[in-house]
Image (cartoon, rainbow, N blue to C red; front, side):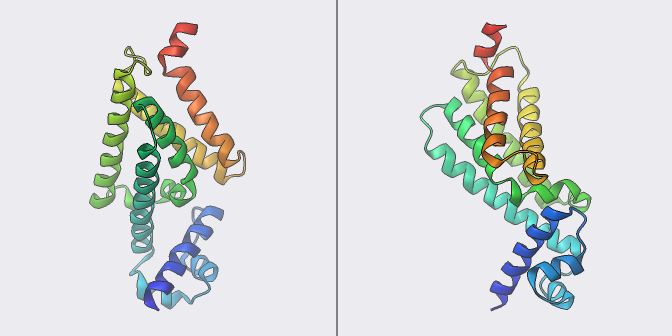
Length: 186
């Protein structure tokens, strides 16, 4: 029962935070159809709730990335599938933009750094295959892809783009700006 209530609170928090990144505990409780006290029984504070959501978002991002890359035939294909999968999972992590209290949370910082390292590995593989331009610094490619994913998540969350459109735009931007194919055409 407690696990079901906790899951309901987390789901309510995702919904409330997708409507307003500054949603209060009262708004989250209302969205989860529980009392404010119930939220605090499961999570000691709003920051604790956000940390639980961040851990959940990290796990979801890891899951969709592993699932997507397992289907890839090449590193470039793995990069394409992973970026599209992470953009598709954007609802689970979009709230992190407003969660300033998590920026110094060691567990969250380590997980984000690990994910960026894994992205760098995908980029290296795609570069070794000749897909990613060798003249663009690795750190720039990784930061660009990360920024594109965040921009896509924001655009989907604000209703400016549909999820599939955002996924396609992220990949098209990578392919047209960072690939060797784009460099040859210009």
